Image (tube, rainbow, N blue to C red; front, top):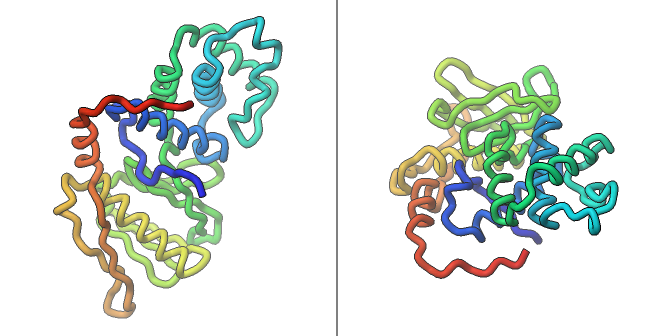
Length: 249
């Protein structure tokens, strides 16, 4: 069992408490390590350097010998060239940053990436090609070959439904069709889509409605997201008045 972030903040820097930002930082750091947060080499080096600064502080030649960054596992795999770039940024650009500042800068960079907040669902397109479907704070995405091939903002998604193993997403001009491995996986995908759209799109939880996947020929499922929406969560965060909790990094 492990702690996971279900709904990623659209702007993690706007979270009032440092401890909340720290927990989101840990989740995105995990996403980077597991290959969910995809990025170009220069961005990867910067993100890893922020992690390094947050965990070991300023570069000290007496404590950090040649190759010191190789002792940390930031990604599923990386090269010596990338390790050198990480160390170079850590040495020359981040001196003086506290752990909290480095974590905040990490979050600000991570949120600009296309796969920020992605929890990939394996599927196949109508041609039988492998694809990963995901829901982010900003909309629905489809990834193929480590590239984003579709992105539809939440306010442009008009409907989502499933029939057996087939998932449909409707936009004003197009309908995207994908096939999940099993009916159960497809139903889970649909539920994730419904609750993500409700959480990020709606202004208040009282606007949440029960959604059905059924039609004239298919008896589907009904589902209703239960909980606060993003705007309400951020408003509650802004009103917190307690003493900041101690963080044990």
